[in-house]
Figure (tube, rainbow, N blue to C red):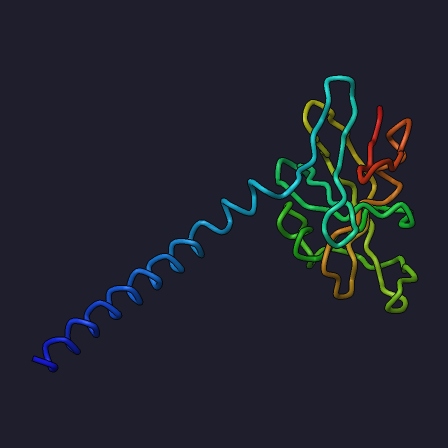
Length: 168
């Protein structure tokens, strides 16, 4: 009788662990959808403002369509140009093999070589800009930077109450 009781408890515990395992797998599968729903996103108002919330790491991230491809940028008012990672440059159709690294930039990690490019189209909502100057970073870089060669197209840049607002 004791053996059957132990078998019943073991089966019950196995069922509980199976349910926990299934729940964890389900949560992992839904994580991207859940995180997208709770993460603050940029918005574009009907009066030509782009509102970007501060992220948890203290930076402001803005996704633009470059040549019809979405690219996420870190907004960097200290950068004079739009600076693309090699990966983002490749993704928007720039052939890295044809680039000429004729420029240089002083960064926190030292001096890096840069290759000048023009971004055919830069789009956010109904705002479309053509031939925006940029550079491709010749070194390692985690995120593309949205610098003043693009930000300067806006009339006003302000940070207030945890939001960065770009106004045309």
